[in-house]
Every structure is written in C-alpha cells, then in structure tokens.
Amino acid sequence: MSDNTILPITPPANVVSKSYFSSYEKYMELYEKSVSSPNTFWKEQAEKHLTWIKPFTSVSSGSFDEGNISWFEDGQLNVSVQCIDRHLETRRDQIAILWEGDEPSDIQRISYQELHDKVCQLANVLKKHGIEKGDRVALYMPMIPEAAYAMLACARIGAIHSVVFAGFSAEALRERILDSTCKAVITADEGRRGQKRIPLKSLVDEAVQSCDCVEHVFMYRHTHDDVPFNNSIDIDLSQSMKSEDIFCEPEVMDSEDPLFILYTSGSTGKPKGLQHSSAGYILYSMLTHKYVFDYQEGDIYACVADIGWITGHSYVVYGPLANGATTVMFESIPTYPDAGRYWDMVERHQINQFYT
Image: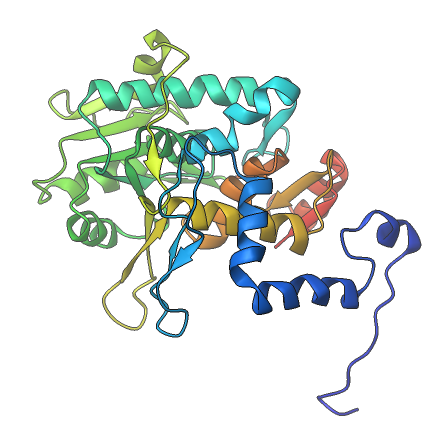
C-alpha cells in the first residue's frame, strides 16, 4: 500500500445526522469562505459566538503575509464572562467542570454557578493583595479545579497568567517568573500523580528566593500535608477565599489586550514566552473545540492534557467553557491504578469526546 493512499472513513449514520458537517465537502465550504472572504467570515463568527461589552467595527488590520494581524481591535470584552457569566441564565446548574482526582473515586462536580462564585472569590483575593490589570501571575498548579479558577480569575481582573507545567524544576519556574516579571505565584501545597506526591510549594519557595518581582505566593491546600509557610509572603487561598464576595466586576478588556503568556519547553534553547490576546484566542478556541470535536449541546467532553501546555489551555479550560460544555479535568496518570484507567473513566462519566 502506498503511503499516499487515502482510505475513506464512513462514520455511523447517527453521528453524521447530528454533526455540524455531514461530509468533508460541507466542511470545505466553510473553510473556503474563511480563505476567500476572511473579514466577512470572522465578522460573522465573532458576532455569533462572542458576547461583547463594546461591539467591534474593525475585523482585522495588518498583514496576513507577515503575521502581524490585530483582531477586532476596537471591540471590548472579558474572557471570563465568555466562559462563565453568559451561561448563568440558562445553565447555572449544569456541570461546568467534572474533576477526577488521582484516585478514581475522588470526583468533584462543579456547576457553572459554583465556578462563577469560586472564580470571583479568587479574583477578589488577588485584587485585595494588589494584583491589577496587566500584572503577570505565574501558575504552578496540579490538575485540580482550582487551576481553572486561577486562570479565569486572572482573566476576570485583567491580569496575565503564565502557567508553568508543574513537572518542571524550580530553576525552570524561576526562569519563567523572571522573564515575565511575575508579581505573584499561585500554587498548591502538593500535587498527586499515581500515588506520588509532588512538593509544589517547596519548589516554589526555592524558585522565588531570587525573584525580587514576586510579592505574594498564593497557596491552595490540596493534600493538606504540612508544608513550609512564610507569613511575610504566603497567602492561604483555601482560607482567604472563604470571606470574599462571590461577585467580582469583570475588567473591561480591549480585544488585543493580553490574556496569557505561555512558554515553549526550552528543549532547544531558552524558553520563549508567547503572548496570546483576548478576543482572537477565545474565538479560535471556541470554534476549534466546537467543530473539530463536533461538540454538541449536552455532551460530556474530556481532554486529558495538562494546563501547562497550550492544549490544556484551549481544550480543557477556555474552549469548552466558552461553549458551555461540561469539561473533564483529570489529575492522575493513564496507568494508575492500572492501564485501563482512561477507558474506565470514559465509562464512568459517559464521555462523548475523548481527546488524548
């Protein structure tokens, strides 16, 4: 068989009947429109899928050839509103995040209303400790719901989050904190992966020793084991959030305002921080989540990527939540307690789309 042989795949009729694209040709019609009339196409998508504080009049400006495009630059919105607030009227009791911990029996179901309240409480804690629009905040978190709360809380107040994969060393974390001059770090006491404990707080303490830019370390109590705690810099988020109001006014953000910075792995040189803007990124994440995975209303969707990577940003947190989905977060590893863990999870939660 030639390497160039294309074998047709015929999906089941019940899948085709509810799909956004009943055939490859139907998809290509949409694609060709995006290429031949990009401003018309993206105007329609942005008006259909995004909730605007101030509607845009300019779709794009700049050069596609050079790649320096600005999207919807006179429009204003807030990404946390896209992911939470606009769903509350019709789906406040729907599960937003379905979390499965290191143990298969450790399960949390967080509704859109609860997600809203937790994000706002965390956002208010950050504001109380001087975190403002444009400040950079490093996240060094396990795969727990609080990681999503932290990302969305930063988005709510206009802070720029920089998630660092929690498997990286203290030195790798320090390098990224210093490069983007992060004002704060959000972490947990420990992480759990296949019954192993990862000493996240201790690694953060080691990293920030030479980071004069860091004013506070915000820590969730996840395992509740004793960890070092410095009263001059550390904030116990598990305690401080309890007294905060469950509403935080969302910051008005220009479309091109930064949403987050994410660094390359550094495997081929110094890590490079890539900055993603608000409107263009959230629209892209929504559309790819909706069309690539054929997400339908009511589906249970799972992506088992870590939020330390762009896949976790786009397809665990931002894309699914902006589409009003139930998104699965997975803390453990695929071989614990045995190699059937993923498929047990699919059966347990009746997952419709599984991305790995």
